[in-house]
Length: 229
Image 1 (spheres, rainbow, N blue to C red):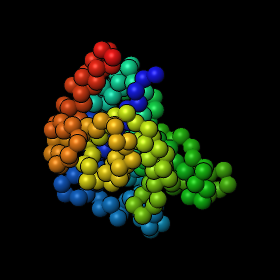
Image 2: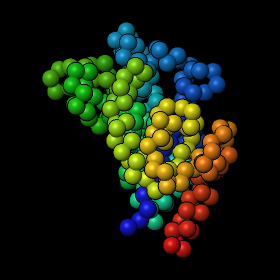
Image 3: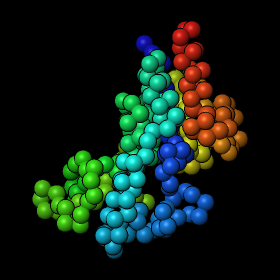
């Protein structure tokens, strides 16, 4: 039975494909404050602005391509049972070939009902303000906004608790939810952090590099280890 590797990915992985996030140095997301476009209150106040914002994010994500980090993580599946937990809302992991991906913060290519949280549909084109669910309620982006609970966090914790190895890529060990999830890793699990500015992390294998630079050689090393086992 192959070892289980759980990978926690954050904005740094998507950034290497050219997608910006609100964690950029100016604290804005494509010129907008988070409070304007990424909270339930923002959607209540100005739904058209929020819809327009995510339409543009969807178009940008569709135009982006998986980078070497995405592609390398997909290669890990050749020898390991790989589960990816991502904070990213794009589909670059899936397009690179990863089969098991859990999106903590939602997905750009889906919408959900504003009333029924279980009513979720695939959506790859622009959303309009007039788009409704089957009961006539307004649809909204399928995104976990600030101030909302993260419904898949418990499933993510269960995955980490069963891992033989945990790889953190493109997100600091000081940033939620990656930092909190890492606490669930078994004592025997090997831990890796790929980050260009890594914090001090005792007991963690540090690779001080961007995702695109640091993940491929790590994957090569892990595949070689599996081949020798």
